[in-house]
Amino acid sequence: MLTYENLIIEKEEGIALMYINRPKALNAINADVLKEMEQAIDALDADDEVRVVIITGAGEKSFVAGADIVWMYNMDQPGCRKFSAYGEYVFRKLERMEKPVIAAVNGFALGGGCELAMACDIRLASETAVFGQPEVGLGIIPGFGGTQRLPRLVGEGRAKELTYTANTIKADEAYRIGLVNHVYPADQLMEEAKKLAKRIIKQAPLAVAYAKHAISVGMQCDLDSAMAIEADMFGNSCATEDKSEGMGAFIEKRKPTWKNK
Ligand code: DAK
Image (tube, rainbow, N blue to C red; front, top):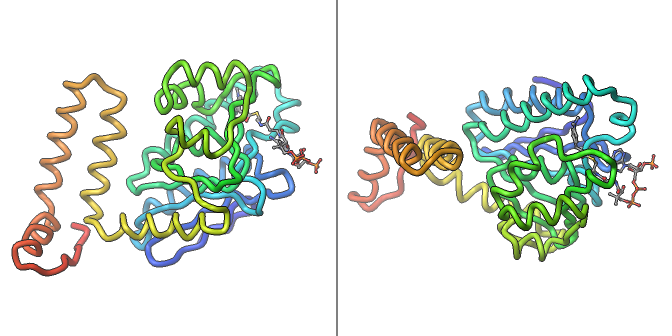
């Protein structure tokens, strides 16, 4: 079992909860956090007990308040380049996990925090959540995929307005523009995230993984290539024992028991 200084990992009933845990710095991300996230992503993806991952921030106030400004302040150009590339790599690894990842955004999701949430499959927010890409106010630009994922999620015009102005938006506005799927009172956020995870866990695991691949990879392609990916993933799902189990259970009017094969 790996131990972490900047993360808390808890597991319950097929769900892994990953808390980014630097509450004194509002969970700001530095190289140590990224390194531990990389290790945790590998460990959780390889862990057969885990079906869905939920990422949230430790403490009451913040999901992740961005990349660590104090740490970035002393970084030279090659260091910034390396940090950005490493962050992009870790967030991409997160995005490519076979298992679905839910961001439970419990407060500030600024800069790298908003980028972390966007690298997850589904975003849920508490009513207290605040989103934004305030980097241009610090003399930099988003460096963990924000310039690419934000326009894909909310459209180019909205992404440019948010990024150029460094404005922050509250949860209701994030919901209105499609940045988050649902907003809940703060004390219900984790329960709702777990409910969503449990609903996913009831489905055939490989089918969920193939659907994730088809959507995530297909979104990066032209429609014809994306349709070909869907056909491949559909074919893969039809080669599983769970396809016989799922359809057999329907015909026999019983609940399926998934084999994950
Ligand atoms: N980094 C480091 N420390 C942070 C921090 C951050 N991003 N955000 C907050 N903190 C620390 C504060 O310094 C303070 O520490 P102490 O003074 O107590 O030691 C503590 O957390 C509590 O914060 P506040 O006292 O400021 O709390 P408030 O409630 O008054 O304000 C706030 C909360 C979130 C509005 C405020 O803290 C704030 O504006 N924080 C900065 C938010 C921000 O600008 N985030 C974007 C960071 S830039 C790249 C790679 C990555 C990125 C860009 C480029 N490359 C290498 C190219 C990504 C960049 C970013 O994410």
